[in-house]
Image 1 (spheres, helix red, strand yellow):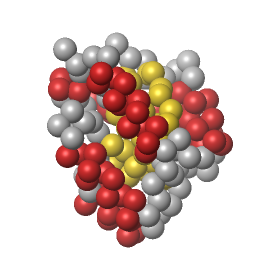
Image 2 (tube, helix red, strand yellow):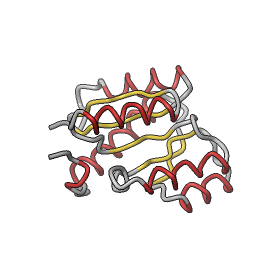
Image 3 (cartoon, rainbow, N blue to C red):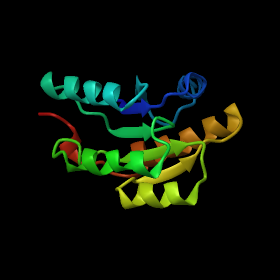
Image 4 (cartoon, one colour):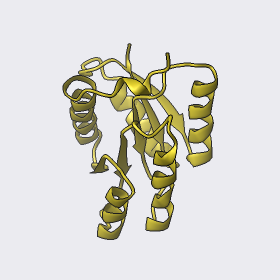
Length: 146
């Protein structure tokens, strides 16, 4: 089964770049990408998976849809949900604001990645991330519906 990734980002250009990078024939892991432009869309996708007993997503890339320490509090609320608690959330944003980085980890982000400037750098970063989460790390079986 492919690694199922939910990208939450409100930047159309960034979404397009991620889609291009994940269509690379040399991906280290088969990947299925879902895209949400905001938290409401993301919650709808996750709810649809839950209701239909589909496989939950394995990983969430949280892009510029959340960009302030106050908005980061969504992570804590999300992690309170029993069904979603174990899904790793990778902050994937263009900001290097130390307060935002600290807030992301305080609210249970699994990692914080700063978006690179070029498509090649983005591809390399995403390949490394997918290799880690899809091959090296062991995701909990709880993220899969039975």
